Length: 144
Image 1 (spheres, rainbow, N blue to C red):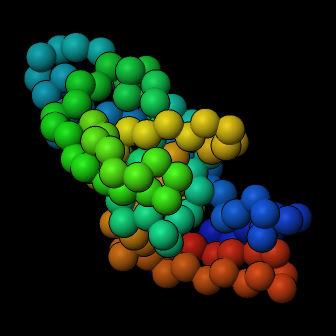
Image 2 (cartoon, rainbow, N blue to C red):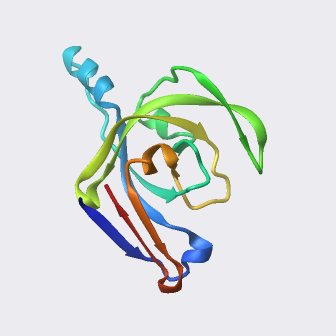
Image 3 (cartoon, one colour):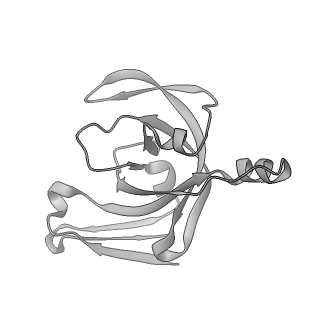
């Protein structure tokens, strides 16, 4: 099981951040190839591992950069914004640091104003992983 351990100087305040590549979903990639269209390059993203998020999310603008169109809306509720609707997209999330990825992930698009992140890794992905948060050491390990 490939794993990544990362030490962040102030893990308590910054949170467990992992670098990922966000790309068009494998299904979309297959369609684009059959239509002989260009496949957009994945986008490097700073993703916060968030056990409080039931679904993974990307910040506004990422889907546009990948040329994606939403395939629906879902209603979510957050402590900061209450209940509101968010567009849904399917993407591939690749963790190049340990050569693994999650294909065809349904993510929501949301604003992350004032935060230095490009998205969230939620429990929909974490259910496939092992996560160890070692607060006293300012480190975390994630394995898939």
